Image (tube, rainbow, N blue to C red; front, side, top):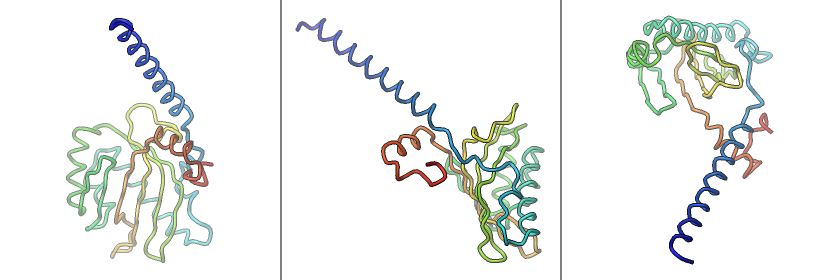
Length: 199
């Protein structure tokens, strides 16, 4: 085989491999939808037997958080967190304390997310005693049309506590970007890794 033929064969092989990789990616992407999208109404996930008033107060905290974001009000946003609350973003930034969370969001509201809103769905609320709870859901920030529940790209965990004044506030927030193609690949490669709700 001469050099010209070998070069053509190598290019053809590379093209076939590239097309195969693109095809595989597109397959994984288009089949990676989630089954459990959650509820748009936080009150829907208040567990049976829990104190309904506490569940509604927790939901009101999340409503106030969403409202503050839509207004670009960093002070109101920060007030939804405990004085020593923590906030971890999906890019890995970790804020410590209400003041840090507030000032970080003040900068965000003036630049990166200016004019944006939050969309959320709620998956689960669990009480860890009478003064602590964990709320999990899906969420995203957006401008323009509100994304559908299946389009929310982040999974979020809120740890809430009854603060010293009796109000429910966020003690810790963690935001994780969903990697839908990697998730789908892992479920195909090892089906047992899929959460029960996604099988």
